[in-house]
Image (cartoon, rainbow, N blue to C red):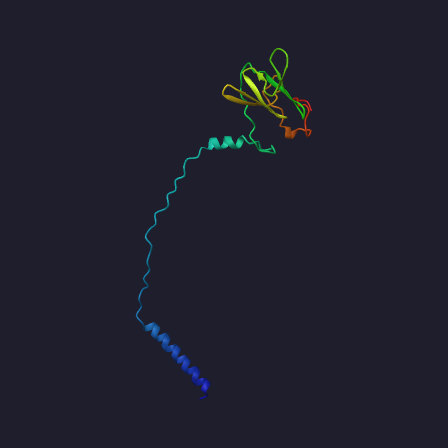
Length: 168
């Protein structure tokens, strides 16, 4: 016999013996450790006040570029006249108050209007400080509690000289 056949016959005999030994060996079951039952995690989230969250979200106007909440309309003194306009520029800052009856009054920073003192004037707001309260007013249309559209929606000059509700 050639040596290659002898080598192959020896290899085949060895593999057959290995297979026979594996089949005749006693079978033992593998030991499997099962983990103890893990109780489900109990997560309790604090209650959420959705009404408050909705109010915060709704206060931010969707189509306003700065997304800042619109100041709430504060019902001030009945004696406080309506802010009907603001005259604002580099040399002048005057708030125009119109009472229900009587003459229109022009008020500058530091002057008093009723129980309030005018503390600040900007192109679109007037700030009044009074007994324990600060009011931030925007001009109002006559006979209406509705504010004019925000300045960002109306064409505006770089330094407006005069702003009157309803007039562009």
